[in-house]
Figure 1 (cartoon, one colour):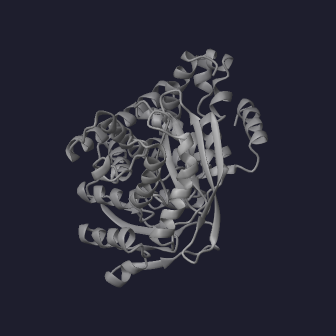
Figure 2 (cartoon, rainbow, N blue to C red):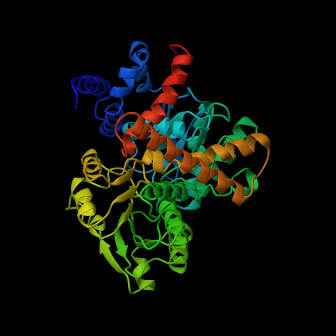
Figure 3 (cartoon, helix red, strand yellow):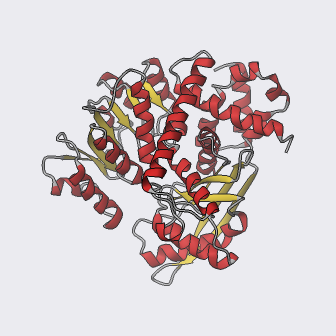
Length: 453
């Protein structure tokens, strides 16, 4: 790390104490940008970096609601509107007990560059709450969502800030929040994405992040003249992203052998086929069950309970060619990355946001792996959200084939930007630098054009 990066990070850490995930996200981007600032001294002069790490607006609020026992519960809500240089703020809402301001800021900061890479007119933002939807009844979730939106509605709008879903926020939650927003503002507008198909949603939106993750991985493999055909793939998570990443891998001839949740993970050496995936989708989406139930249905698989005393995760010690982390941030540590490389993995495409620690990323880059960072590889979700916004604005509904064609085109173009930018700045094959620099150049140019605001 250069002296300049150290000094810059000292300032960020001093202003944003106890926000380790945010520090990590900023440092990972800043380390890529020194050659950009050398070529573009105007960005140093206008303090683009100093401005880009400061959110334009941070909203934090109380969310009171009443549970089924009649007891009052109180959660905390957040919306960080980070950067609007390219368009309305765009980014998901996360409902999870781990949510705090630092995590929302890390996610929002990543979103700026991810959204820029899609080449659609959207800025970066993120939000959520420390509310846990697990174990709550539908009525409890509805009461919480209505209370949450009763404050959030003041800060969002179709041309201002357009939230979407994230961990803990699916179609049910989006529906409850949209209904409350519509009631409060007396307008039917495309203020949330991930909506139901009957009321403004887009086909392919549920599949988009997982599909896009695989489209990006396929492009990386293509640089070596390879495809997914016959590749062993290790997938973490079993939610939306993991499910549709698995579906697309099956379609492309690959073999997914693992899935996981917070309780543990399953290894199915026979491979997870379409029937088994259908069982997982019903288990997680309809019955809201746990992944250990998979082995009761398919005894050929083995279940491994999560051992929280371990620093590493044994799911990443399974021999494979392709790793698809699709669960949560920092799920791959340095030891996990070493295990993946040791066991023959050479392609990593991130479906989760920042799932690899900085030490793990270093291992992948030193091994010359095909490593697709989340801000590039998982941009399919927000890209299709932007397509949903377009359909809402035009009062149109595109076909499944049309949305999927546009999604694939966006992911192919993101790969092209990352690949060519990495080469242009002297680090061929380094998708981290390519994504960071490619996204930054677009945002920095817009910020410079718009003056000091």
